[in-house]
Image (cartoon, rainbow, N blue to C red; front, side, top):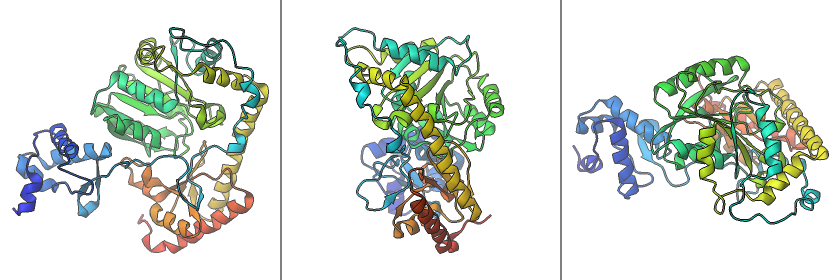
Length: 451
């Protein structure tokens, strides 16, 4: 064995996948393995540790799912650098037209000016209830309408959906616990799981949402939590059908203490019915609804309905005097969602997003491209060449798009998709983007997928 091979293997310990992954993680944290460094070849490490190759492969897979390493095929597995998880939103410092933002249309976000003058009241002091009374009454009705009437629940207000999901996971999970995530996955959820030190377990998504076989495999893998999107899954736009929800509930019924989190982020804007995957007698569950898509990302408020025990644990992490959500923000949210003019504008925005996306998708289909007809702010476009090659060609033509492999956990098919945010384009710009996308497809014909 060459000296550099011995150096690469020295200090790595373990007889199980978890132990090997933890040993490698410790070496990364101590700076003995840095960004870009190659991990030992699977066969060499298996021989050095006297374990099966599959054990080492499982350890590497754990690290990859945590975002700590990346596989480069025959070039081996390498340690990733900082900030390896892409962030949603506008790209910084670019002169390109950004069509990968995932943002709502600023023109469709309600103006809070008049509502702000109505929310000023007496100050809220330490020790008072953390949920504003009026918002609580409205939210109770809103959330109960999505749940079986007999289901006991408790409300919690958090600083957005990602904050709720992070707090919920930390309530029940410890480091390296498995979390079932949709694949391809919403970037914020993927980031939350990886930064929390949990193990992301991919569950494929099709046109009806999270797949039954994928969830069954994740549960068999011992996941402690499941995070799913009932409507407008990001990035694919898929919504869970009632047929699929029934099948998923049947799988979850045998695992009542697995925490099930539904992130219904599109809620008031969705054109699809809400089909819940939470079994009627499930012990640990939460339905999370953010207001950011219809009232604006800066509102940073989400309503969580959960089983009483989970709600109690979550409330303990939002104690008065420390981390409650500002009552001014809660009052503003209530003033907006109960304003008939604002609600009319939200409905108009829902129609706008659906119609603009449908028109763009139809135009691409007429040119031979495959586009998922889903719900949400984005389109999921299948391209015949690797999406990063397409994105490079689009950059040369003035566009900044989002390649699908930024969202993937294990599904290589996402490498041949683009997520496009086109609802705010003018007709002229939309036509220009379609022409440039077709030109990019033609220019990358030599790198097309096989099959």
